[in-house]
Image: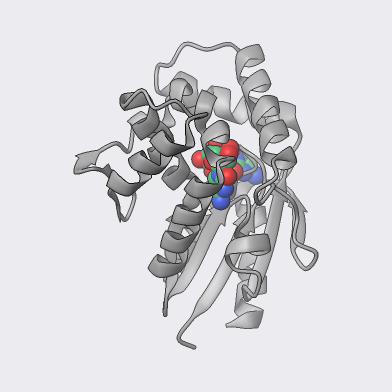
Length: 218
Ligand code: CDP
Ligand code: CDP
């Protein structure tokens, strides 16, 4: 099989990237974190003080942007921004950036280009609905907002970022709302996706479930 696509969608903190990375290693798939691509564009807009309501300015930024992904390294216009894209200030605006049509058109093109002729697992919000509606396997991960906020809080604490549970919870709920109500490619489960609630499951349990599905299709 030349091309094999696994689509993993779901809200923030549902476990998409953790699970996708493990499964990618197990089956030798290329892993593409599409959220990181939206985060790179969001960071670029912050660094250049781009007014997100000014479509001309957004298009100009998109024309000049260079996104390079080398495994788990994210290079924005020649600079490694792998850490900078995960900070709360980027998280705070990324959903507004991702709601802009021009941004989505550019990144979806790039996601399809990167995936061409490969065995790929992509995680995001619209992979199974828009980017690859004919994916070989579609998974939709969910978990309660409280559980997802706790997971994120733990990660922030480990990185030494000072933030409260309430702030993380509100940020997650705000992003859930923007992502699922936007006009362009809203976050939603594809009809033929398998939904897995990861709230009370271990990472291993979720991986085992997805691995079995991949094996059945490979
Ligand atoms: O890692 P986390 O779940 O916090 O978010 P992410 O996957 O890094 O995605 C950051 C943001 O990018 C999301 O909240 C969405 O607004 C946007 N996104 C999107 O619109 N479409 C995708 N395929 C991936 C991310
Ligand atoms: O990519 P997404 O935002 O959906 O989630 P993530 O970045 O993979 O974050 C999920 C966090 O919850 C990670 O710190 C995982 O270790 C943890 N976790 C999980 O992913 N799945 C579980 N079943 C339990 C915990």
